[in-house]
Length: 171
Image (tube, rainbow, N blue to C red):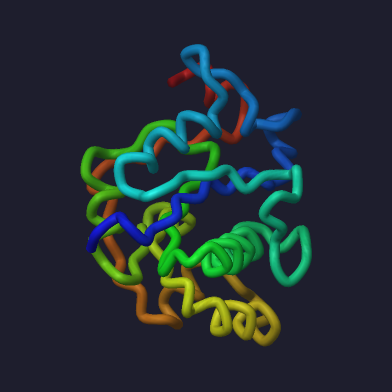
């Protein structure tokens, strides 16, 4: 699949409660974690943006829905700009196994079961996602990915995830 119509979105709107401060802005090797994630997306997309607490790309249908709300907001934002799909990553994933984002981007709808927020989602699936959010009591990115038939793509290796300052120190 060409990257011509893919918007890359770094999901950086979480509360960072275990981290103690906005982890999207935590610095690793001289750059914010969110910037590391955006740099990972850049080779695979036409444009890469950060969806954070600033509200530029608001969660849908309301704030504080976690990653699903961020993905819904990203799909709506992307569709409004004419993109056909969104490649998502969390801000706390500054390093990924080689080839993972490329493998996700090659498929119309795919996700990484090892870290389901890593996914490639078609903008036309927004209605289904909003319905899922409204009707499924125990909602999750994995549950929605399975419901829409997204192809699971294994990472093939451990995905470092930063939840605490100590996690950041180990990278």
